[in-house]
Length: 119
Image (tube, rainbow, N blue to C red; front, side, top):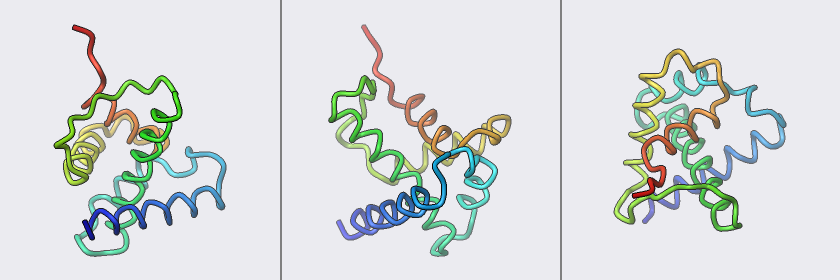
């Protein structure tokens, strides 16, 4: 619970920084996100990475609640650590996309992992 609250607080701080410094997510690209995400544990860089990813995820969830056609089917037992690991892996393996905006990459990773599929 405390870790979740800490991640949420970090996400809010990250979003505030990005909203006040830039209107374009392209200003923070995959190269920069990757560099932060491979930082040592318990550093501000790693915390920034985690907060950024969870902030984008929470934004996606809010869009879904507001009626946006975001088609995510995330199982109830998926943890924030699982979300972070999925995004880390996507970014690590997607070097050709590092020129894209950080939020765009996070969105792609989450959609690839948990897009709803019609049966």
